[in-house]
Length: 405
Image (tube, rainbow, N blue to C red):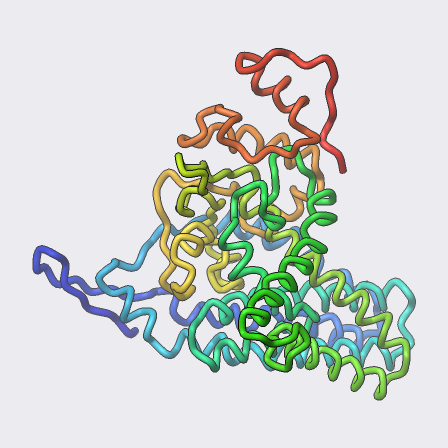
């Protein structure tokens, strides 16, 4: 297995081997799972197979994360550059791009040409959409890189869920304001995922267009200029939609609406759990402190990281946005999620359970230590949160508001 050699500051030679090197192929193969129920239904005619991928992702995957456990192994700082420059890892993110189109077209073709019941049609479109959420994850990895090829591939793969505004909003909006009350993509303590979605999805769209409009205007170009990367990605989405409608009829529009909505929901689910309640402090000059690893929830569960291009080592990603997925590191004393992303999604979909698990974990973080002034709190939930967690820090209010759904 390929290794990397470096020299420490004291002159000692070190050798590092990424023992997960070939396992990263799971990030390439995982989106193809949406085609498994298609094949099983084609061979058996049983529509219950369309439930299978939901059971795998939201029951089996969390259980496997818990059973397999965590990996806190880090590549040594002395070999990070070599690891980043290894073309093998980049090529995996390239290869998965066309596979996302294969999944979309394959699932759409099957749903639109077979005599499926309404619920089976919905389940196939929905899970194909959740799989397209992985396309946004691929676009996330590619869109942070400086090479023209990777930025182009990012725009292409983001066309699958018609989320072409993601890179502009994420790189120039979310990363700048992450873990602040001003960030639409940072969830607040006491805010349910359903309330968060109503703020995050339209907010991301609006912010992306404002950012890109300002960039183009600074170059004396109109918002609808052909160099607008949002429009470039949307044009591909439109082309795919036209092809599907021409090939399979107007019912393709219904399929795409379900598909895109579930892809957006997948991204919203990730955004919700990644920064819940975390807050960057303001400096004496009124600016937010630099984003540090403690401003993101981290996760080291092996399986879910291997199928998501290490997305769950989110703390190091925000501290070093250009660092490639294989080089992301774990740090001690970070905010740690109790399960991988798939398990945390299920918990988030049950707000009472999410608050019960995550609120005490949030307040117990060393840099917060129960101080609600160091927490990003939903304004609507503030009275009830202070009544429950901060009686010794405030005058008891005369009314309470429960967190809104």
